Image (cartoon, rainbow, N blue to C red; front, side, top):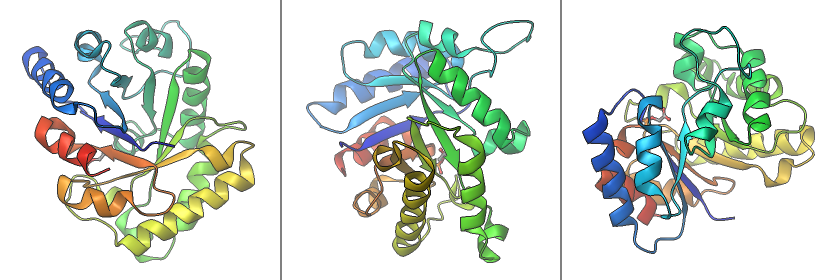
Amino acid sequence: MRPLIAGNWKMHGLTEDSAALARGIRHGLGDLSPEVLVCPPFTQIAAVAAILEGSGIAVGGQDCHARRLGPHTGEVSAAMLRDLGAAYVILGHSERRADQGETDALVAAKVEAAVAAGLIPIVCVGETAAERAAGEQEAVVGGQLAGSLGAEFAGVVAYEPIWAIGTGKVPTIADIASMHAFIRAELVRAQPEGAGIRILYGGSVKPGNAAEILTVAEVGGALVGGASLVAEDFLGIIRAC
Ligand code: PGA
């Protein structure tokens, strides 16, 4: 399977910045071979999808609501994302688990909604620094996988240690390898399609460390935050594949 390099733009980008970033990625990509995805804020999805049309670069959302429709002021459904041209949606990012109090059960409900609308969910899991210091990382991530994916998951999992997000700190290659092997084993044990589920690494991926991280066994790509906001940095990560 080709690696998937996904950019999470988070809450960054007005119309001009987003358009320039999307054009920069499109023009710089050339015939590079990984699968590439960008996840702009809701407000920029339609414009970015239009700029990227025909490029092979996919577009995704950063969240969706668990319900199909209804009286949920300010929310965005999975079908609305699909309608704008999104193919993927990031769910259960640690920032949402922390800021919006999203639970595993809510993430599982969102996964179901995303799949029902024809989106591929990217479910984020990962431990805090304190949990790793206490040696609890596998218990934490195992619990998140068990609670967030549902019974027949066919999307993407992103392992993002919370302490590595936006900090410039990255786990050792051995720690990435061991967590990805653990996640693979859990997926194979619990999911009918577990052997084929892509597992991304996320957390301070940069052009300078991407090549080493992307060659680790069971790392099927990267979920990139900060470095996805600069076209040359994001392209540098794509070139590292
Ligand atoms: P970062 O963010 O690359 O800025 O560490 C990753 C993420 O939160 O998906």
